[in-house]
Image 1 (tube, each protein chain N blue to C red):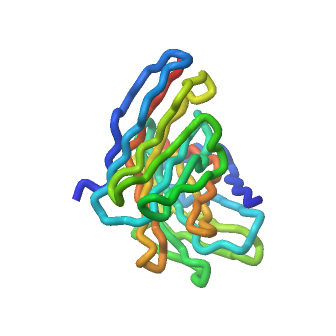
Image 2 (cartoon, rainbow over the protein chains, first blue to last red; image 1 turned 90 degrees about the vertical axis):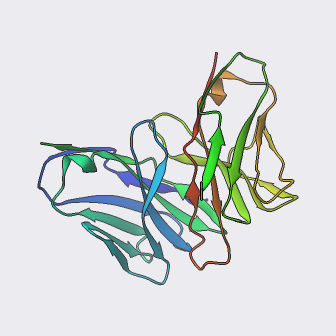
Length: 110
Length: 114
């Protein structure tokens, strides 16, 4: 059974810092990996999707990497801003179904 | 395009009551999904459908039923509500014609069972 773990569960950093969120998964036979953002009481916003054949994807200040052999992905956020405060979820796909981690709650302090 | 829409946004049920959560997508996606998210947790798959008339169980199907009579709609039925079903429910859809199978999510239904 695929299990997805995100560490840390919560992270608080001052504005302007670069930071890394971690995601690990137990079964490397995945189709792709997605990173989502979730604001309190809201739905999910897709940030980045990495196909299993890719090593990384970039969008603006966000960069996601994927290492299937070690079962790990990281989400790098550059020059963090208070507006980046949210919960970040990673999810791996196999057989068209997503398995989610429990999320990292990120707070950026002005 | 409205994308994936869900109704209602909020609902309070008494134990033993029934209700249907509605989900509609206008993207002509074949695949549709229902997830639940408990406080401080990730999403867990309840049921999914790969097309009209075809449904299958996910990780946590007990206490729920689904049907898929059209491509657009994928309702989730709770027959005898229990406090353990208090959660936020998300519907999603995807199109297998793209290489990514990227899933698009609705805004969620917040359900409380008391």
